[in-house]
Length: 329
Ligand SMILES: Cc1cc2nc3c(=O)[nH]c(=O)nc-3n(C[C@H](O)[C@H](O)[C@H](O)COP(=O)(O)OP(=O)(O)OC[C@H]3O[C@@H](n4cnc5c(N)ncnc54)[C@H](O)[C@@H]3O)c2cc1C
Image (tube, rainbow, N blue to C red; front, side):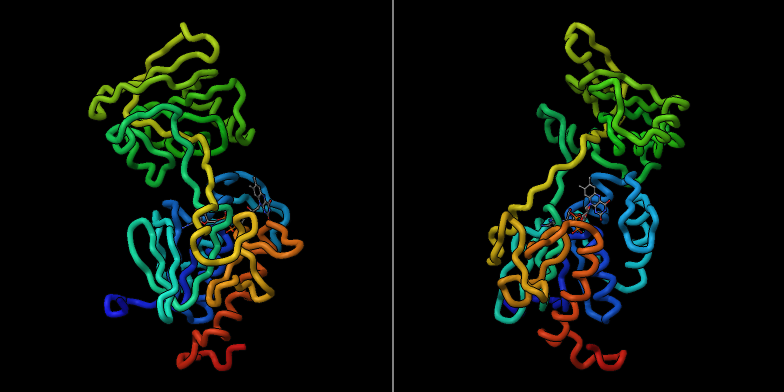
């Protein structure tokens, strides 16, 4: 088995939320060879997925900072060190072999001397339409977030949803898409007021209160969506759509780690003062862990990072023979 192992990392960090991102940076700063694994297509965890527009007021050093802007800063900081990052990989299993951990994602195997669990409230998956659309439509016609706005150049784009996520996407695509329609089941939107003003002053078409009832996909040419007015099923409209973006938020599932041979409490990893789990070599930080009087806020999670990493370095001799900065405490 060991013969097949190509690379052994000092530390594998599972979860690229704010705490996993800072842990990857800090481990890099301490010269560790790090692999960061994130299940979504983007780093940033809850801040990016659930509340990108929120102005946070309890982050040290900022009187207030928008969640999405804070993640940008963490990304810049992370880029200062060579950390391997795998996106779109969900860690499904963690197994102890002789002297390394084997991490199995939905796509690949990774090996590490230590593991840092920073999975927060668990991997997020996007909420989907309430009816089955079939695999072809799912793959070719629907997206859940925008990775590259240029992909939507000159297209008729329909966005489903009424929160910050949907409105952010609509504004982001304004410079690219031919037409943008937002479909929301309520007349009121739950998005930042200043962004709504931008929407109302733009050519974006708002269809409310409507729900998507069916999709007529035609190999992405002349495709359309049928919408129905809420509580008035006789009122239907057909909207010409080249691509549909569903922005109904994300749901989380933190039950995966039940099989990782570590003690859990309410699906959170029980840790000691070193932030180490009941399995030696597996640490947990941020929203993923639990100990008496734990508070799930960023400041707490960031504080746990150096505690866990210093302990991992010293307990497992991670920087032995390459202590280039002198004595590491
Ligand atoms: C609405 C709301 C508002 C908040 N406001 C504030 C605030 O103002 N100030 C504050 O300090 N805190 C706030 N919090 C709390 C704060 O968001 C969390 O404490 C913080 O996100 C924890 O970061 P984390 O990195 O531990 O976890 P998360 O942000 O949950 O990130 C975990 C990451 O791990 C990934 N992941 C999970 N499982 C796996 C797996 N098996 N394989 C690969 N990847 C995986 C997830 O996709 C996710 O990206 C708020 C929370 C919410 C919900």
